[in-house]
Image (cartoon, rainbow, N blue to C red; front, side, top):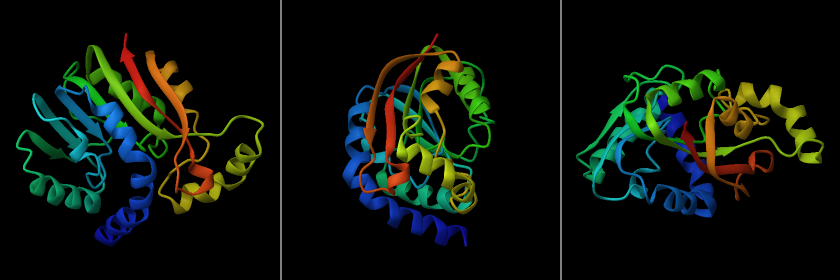
Length: 206
């Protein structure tokens, strides 16, 4: 069942990747180097967007079905300095100050405790290290879309594996003690209208 779920996820996300996410990854990953951790790496959609050169990447994915597809995609890529791990965002299996970059793509919406996950990301980043994020978020307060997000969120959480429609992730990143260096608000095209509001950017460990 886990493998079927991962397959269906890839099929569903293909249009979103082509419409939005591929371009965003190209922009944000261009300067990534050194020791890198990607949390919630899914089935490995990001692999091809990491630049060649000095990168030692750990791709962590707790879901077994997605992790198996991730391993297969990574094997086909030939990226010898990339590896797969099974840890979650709230409990990263790494020493303090281990990474130059941590990458998060559509992860903060579905972690059980977003505050704890962000503190873990901060813990494993080196001083001055960068947190790169692409996340769908709550719509503007008071807007019609936000009201619909609030209405549907209890059901959405149950059917979409703890994905929340109304998480204020930008505020959570700031509250965790990061300095937001770059951020863009955009629309995640070709996705469900309630998950289209999105942010992407870079936050620095102070």
